[in-house]
Length: 197
Image: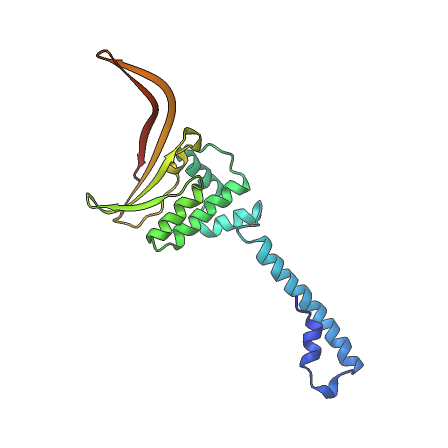
């Protein structure tokens, strides 16, 4: 980290080097400038979204217009009844910042979904049967992956563009079906769930 005293003594003309009054003045000025720089570094680090806590995080919520209560209501709508801790609130604030600043490109929409879904990749596709529609699908998920989190996550999309999120889940079970004297052994049930905001 830059020391202001070294910087100040380097920048003065050589005929003033070693002058005691000037050195005392530079030390006093450098100490204050070092404290000021430290203050701004801490301000940037501790009050940024990634490290802010409590009231500072609520202040960021005031700026982006999403209070803890509003974030909790969003989580309740999404069937994610979790306590609104700083970590959870930080996630909703990141989503709201993305919502406020997005151009709604496919990359922006994907990024907003991935804030809430890190379990598996999301595959982008388009379908001629669904014009002006962004479609994201998952690979086969197990019930433990909780696809409902993806389907109920807050969505970001452009006006006039539809967004389809398709979660493919597979449930393993052991069952034998009998029909007309024949027996079939079924070991996997494949279910497709879809959410369209």
